[in-house]
Image (cartoon, rainbow, N blue to C red; front, side, top):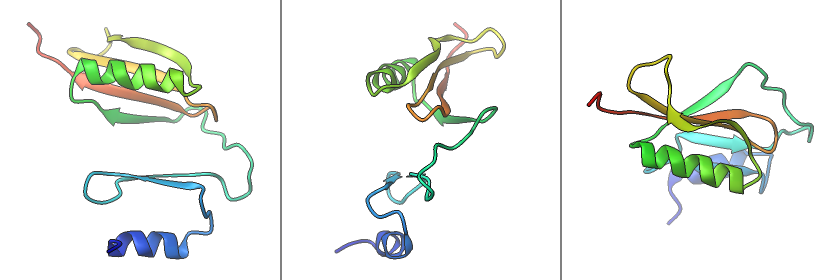
Length: 106
């Protein structure tokens, strides 16, 4: 049986196959192709994801690059934020995305 929220989203969504839902038990992130077909401008906006570990941030970065993203900051510690480990990239549409993990200071 299709979950109610999934039927509702797909039932009203004008984007057809151009929607991707992400989440564990329900959607927490929707990725949509613009309705007008034009590339969006997100200069100055970064979408960040919580990584459970530095290794997960490493995988995020590697997979993103493998999918056509461009490096905007290799995975590693960030001096401006104690205990932060992050990876930045731009997706093929030019959106800046990152994954952050916070690690022990030891």
